[in-house]
Amino acid sequence: MKLLSLLHRWTGGLVGLLLAIIGLSGTALLWEDSWILLDGANDAPVSSAAELGDAIEVAFETAPGLSRITFAGDEIGLHQAIYADGSGAYIAQDGTVVDRWAGPWGRPELWLFDLHHHLLAGETGETITGVLGILLLAFAITGTILWWRTRKTFRFRLWPARYTTSAIVRQHRDLGVVASPFLILIAVTGTLMVFPAISSVLLSPIAEPDAKPTLPEGLALADSDTDWRRVMANAQSAYPSAAARRLMIPREAGQPIAIRFRQDFEWTPNGRSYVWIAPETGAVIATDDPAKGDRASAVVEKFYPLHAAKVGGLAWRIALTFAGFALIVLGLLASWSFWTAKIGSRPATVLRAKEATR
Image (cartoon, rainbow, N blue to C red):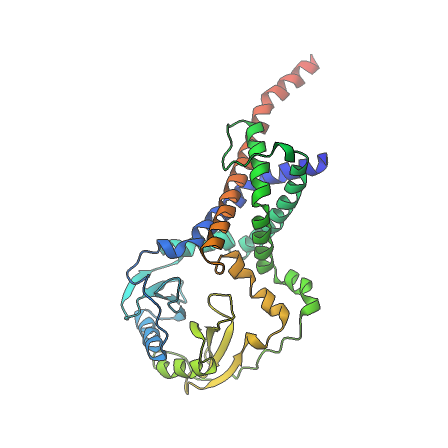
């Protein structure tokens, strides 16, 4: 038990600040629909193929190199266009461009997303966040084990009663045990999204061979001359009752247009129902319907909505907000108390060492 406590304390002291950053950025992103205060952000989404086709044309006219456009939805009533150079635009549903930015730093929700998922360090940062997820899972489990010995002194506090090491430790273990169920879920879903190979191994007993459609090559280039109204109308025919969520322009000429739809049974906000369209004719050339997928795919589809409170309504969002707050407090105070205790103990340690040599 002493070794477990030592590992918990030292590891927490070393990575607590990073966990606090993850908790702070994630909590802010939970409420991004409340603080994007642009004109049209609260408009109800439209879904007609003609109106979506017109929005795509506006996105092409706004800047060259359109990469994708995420259509207005229940969370935000603006279309978001992203371009190959990293710039982007918010487009109101009446076709008005309400905001433009030159790169990820131009919008807070974009750099917060990058901070939360990649620590602003690309693929290396994403790997680090995955490792932090594994450590968070270990902290929640070992912290609960260590708390059990002191359960009779439990007293729930959001903040320590005093800024002393003992008070911080007591608050840390009691807040941690209350938040641990939510932190475990956040850690597991986040880690499995970063390391899908782990998910594949865990879910292999219920997985089935994944037969992705074969897509043709040598198609015409998708550009502003494409009949986008026809493209959207034909794509909608593949999923008549689903909502169009995202259109992705092929990176290279000859590839089909990919459009994501969200069916009623899907939890993921942007859906995982795919349609591929030939740019020149607007014809549907392939689909990938998650309703026909295996149980493993259905489980994987739940990771992000649970992790980001995209399901469960206000109650689940508040629950994850509490978990995010707990992670911030636990991470910051763990690092602060650990390092101040170490630094504060150095003079006494040095003095004792000098006295011993006299």
